[in-house]
Image (cartoon, rainbow, N blue to C red; front, side, top):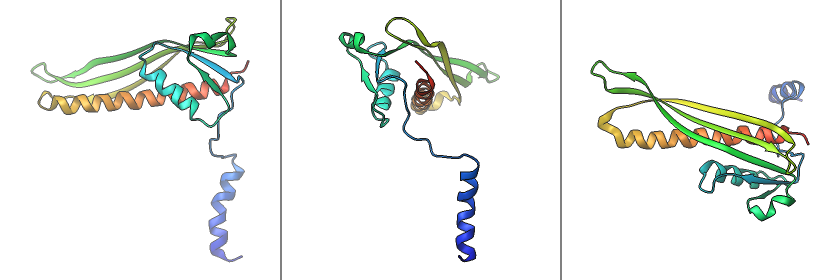
Amino acid sequence: MNKRALLCLAPVALLAACGFRLRGVPEFSFATLYVAAPEGSPLARELVRTLQGSGSTLQVLRDPADLPTAEAVLDLLSEQHERVVVGLNASGEVRELELRLRVHFRLRTPAGDELIPDTELLQQREISYNETIALAKEAEEALLYRNMQTDIVQQVLRRLAAAKR
């Protein structure tokens, strides 16, 4: 082999030696999951869509009539969007906000045995604010909430994959 081929293969060998591997399809210890969440919850919609598109064999149930057939139940207990003023200018106008998305959930069997106890996930982002461009800041705020929601969905997905029956 020539030197160029050896130089190209060296990083691959180092990554393989350290245990690196790409994140694959999540494996769940249950075959069916009932998602109990408020009807209009955007977080629940994204979570169900992500679970269904994850490539695993997990069957996601949303119809309350299917609850008895589920092996696990994910209860989305609350989802709070918070907006807190953290900075003011000299004349008392808002200059900086902190956006928070707080989600409480738990995973249990239909019989009530807890697989994941009541858990809170929190995402925070800071955003500058200017009254003269309020519409643009509203759009930025919506985008940040969407990004926080996606982060929380990924955290829930990893926790579901780690839960053992």
